[in-house]
Amino acid sequence: MKLIYNLSLFFYYLAIKLASIFNAKAKLWINGRKHIFSKIELALHSNTSPLIWFHCASLGEFEQGRPLIEKIKKEYPTHKIALSFFSPSGYEIRKNYSGADYIFYLPMDTPANAKKLVTLLNPQLAFFVKYEFWFNYLNELKSRTIPTYLVSGIFREKQHFFKAYGNWFRKQLSCFTHFFLQDKTSELLLNSIGYTNTTITGDTRFDRVYEISKNVTTYHILEQFCKNIPTFIIGSSWPDDEQLIAQASKSLTTYKLIIAPHEIDEQHIQIIEEKFSVYGNCIRYTKATDATIKNANVLIIDNMGMLSSLYQYGTIAYIGGGFGKGIHNILEAATFGLPIIFGPNYHKFLEAKELISQKGAFTINDTNELVSTLHYLSIQSNYESASASSKKYIQSNIGATNKILSSITIK
Image 1 (cartoon, rainbow, N blue to C red):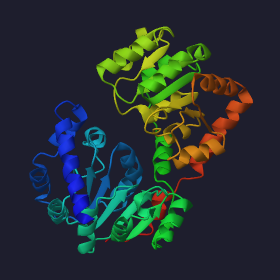
Image 2 (cartoon, rainbow, N blue to C red; image 1 turned 180 degrees about the vertical axis):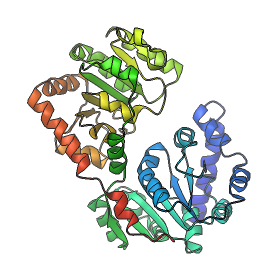
Image 3 (cartoon, helix red, strand yellow; image 1 turned 90 degrees about the vertical axis):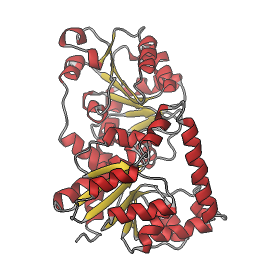
């Protein structure tokens, strides 16, 4: 099975290399790993401080690891933090993140790369966030008795660990010193295959979004745009989300719209402008001025890094991705007490299921259901109840970072 695993990664690499000819994201993935060990060695050559390694798949996992990174950095200022990413959508956005001392792409998970990287980093501890399982790296860390933790871990019955053919994968989980899990279901699944080194600490993202709400970044243009007018924020949207909302524009006439698409390439922005031109005057954030923003009905966020603070200006949030691979981060909106709407593909996300059950979030399948949900939330008592549920949900789930940190030893 180990041979099959390594061969599958080899062919995965070849597929990405082929895709990089015509796909920009794949090209970043390949180019970011060129001469990667020379870059890491150069960065680390003079380091004599103890080092802690965090690995995140992408931006969402980084946001989960971030509270722990920053807490460790604050409490152990003499330690260095190394942060690796698998995906360009994480690395390219956070490559200048000040909370880590070294930031790099994770080299491919081969036995040779694992040995070389762990030798270079020589970490005191290693943290893998949520569900990153690179078995050559994990085995190398275990062989050197380096404590390795899964943070905000979540497991589902459909994963190969819990299948009849999953014996090899189950054994690889022995590389983790401890599992810090989001929920009871994950713990029961791990217990069922013999792993009891588990603690339910919750999701560290709650700590992150709560901190955002207490230290929020304000934006003058957004304040001028909203001016106490009800605002419908569309966060991390994809074309299917945008099409559905555009079709419901007649039910949104009492709102101003802020659209923060997941992809901000010029072609996509132009398509959004065309779709929402019937709604009123559209303006891009990067081109907005005090003079032009006053007459705008739709504000398109055409840059990165603002979304988590945008929700402070909202009345209702629609979170994209639910008509594709899965919804994006809903906690950033919930922390500001916004009722949240999203599409049907949310079942892998515990927070979505829990917020629906608490009537702080609402799932829809089509434009008619969106219109119906908007009508429901237009009733003041319904709106206030949903808003209170969202905020309460965040506040009742903070604290995972402190629970994790109190359970590990840093020297």
